[in-house]
Image 1 (cartoon, rainbow, N blue to C red):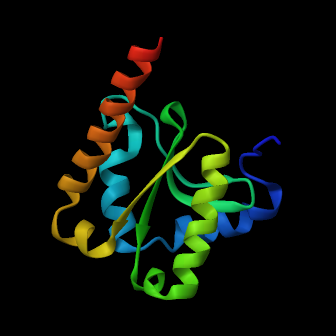
Image 2: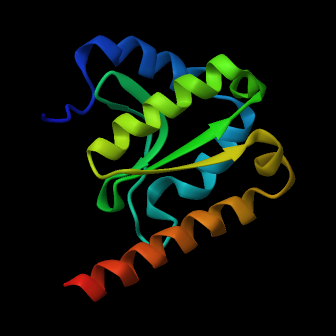
Length: 128
């Protein structure tokens, strides 16, 4: 099975999500864009197979999701679990942050993303 990035069928969804991004997403994007996090490239509202993720770092196969209140229902949690399982089939990791975390301490959220990347690099170097 091959993962397709940015399916044509998700173009309009990705555009709409970028145009109508939430304030917490905007706050994190300001800190991730233009390789500001140690030179690592992040993509915003990136298509991975049939799904669109908030942020994606291709080098580390890292999906970053900023979850609002709509993710607290049981139905939404089941959907998120299916998405995460799909991404893991392709060797990706998913980290999630609640809107409240981003509102209160966006720099701390980005620091956690950075720590994840650093840990991934250490593991990669140990297996090489």
